[in-house]
Amino acid sequence: MLNFLRAYKNYDPAAKSLLEVALLYPGPRALLFHRVAHFLYSYHLYFLARLVAEVSRLLTLIEIHPGAKIGKRLVIDHGIGLVIGETTQIGNDCVLYHGVTLGGVSTLGPKRHPTLGNGVMVGAGAKVLGPVVLEDGVKVGANSVVVKSAAAGEVLVGVPARNLKK
Image 1: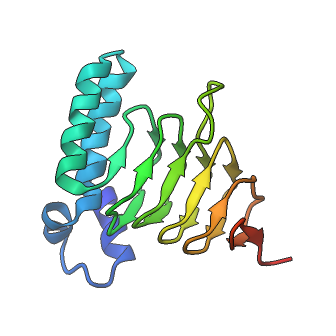
Image 2: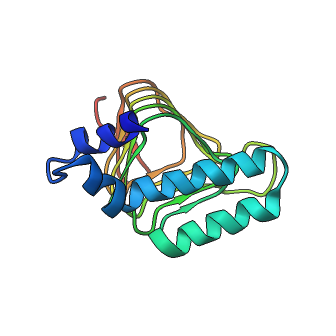
């Protein structure tokens, strides 16, 4: 638990203490609720899982489906309006800003949402849609719309998003 809070404190120079992060930042609260909801979801207690997720959304304005798989030390910066879909997978040490959507574009298929590798950063207002894969270290610019997979280390910007490093 302390590593989780330290990730926020190390990321945000405005954070003055671990206690401040634990009590006053919505991201850690949303992720704590998610861990409980995901546990219930994994035991097929879908109604209870969705109930916990709904309480979390009402308290934090961050919507994370209980089925989403989230790695260690995810930092949700501000977070209001952030949406993470059911089949989303997020690696370790990622950063998501407010207004990000990790969403689906179809109701078909078992995998409808994005997969983020380790160390991925998704800028404010960006949308990553469909079963795309963003490999380790990908950076997505603010308000970009990603609908295609990206190789490790790419920087994606625009609508639709393009690799800036080319």
